[in-house]
Length: 265
Image 1 (tube, rainbow, N blue to C red):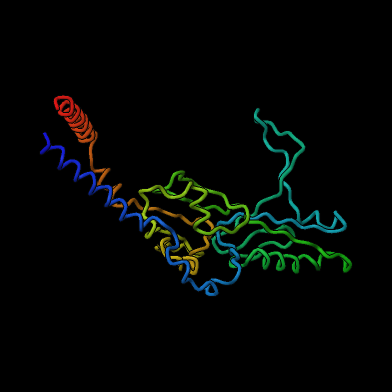
Image 2 (image 1 turned 90 degrees about the vertical axis):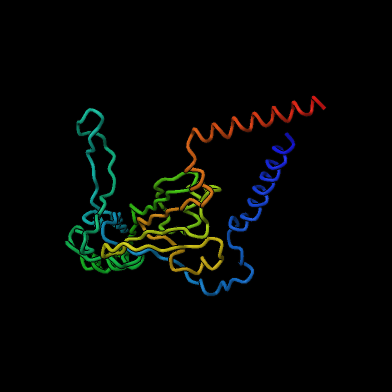
């Protein structure tokens, strides 16, 4: 019996020591002390892309002056399928494949490739000739459909809306409950579609602090993050339920045998 117990003990120790060695792949930003932070200086601004949904609000001192530019959706269908209710919401504008929106009074205007502030200034200059010289309109643009998807070896995979129009990869993973212990931290896959519809793949290493200097550290709308499983998860998935039961049975038998040997002694 000792011949059986001893090899099992040695195998257990090897597995424990092996897991300790792999902990080097768990910690983020392992070389953070040597990072050159100046490389990543500068504030991020998302740019408008085709298929984005925008809300545009025009504010003026004279409410009547802004009315033609603030289309509202009212008379929403209630639960019975009838028009009703006095509440209204701002009209959203879908950016078409060519980058245009159909804006009241102005007609079709091209907005793709602009930041939020550039779009606000652009629309403001377009509508100002329709108002009195004393009027100074304020235009507020918001991306209503900014979202990212996180899937794979994370605790809460899903699609997450971004209210502030700015999110980095760590914030996206935090929304998804962070990586599981089985997720590859040194090989995060980022799937991105550009304004022309071209899909591209990028790899990010969270073990390396230089990831903050990557041009893909900040996410764009509709980005997809996929966390691959590590070798441990892959090997575990290959073990069927019957094999798991056999291991459990062997463990129980070994424990009982060990107990019997100790009692006999």
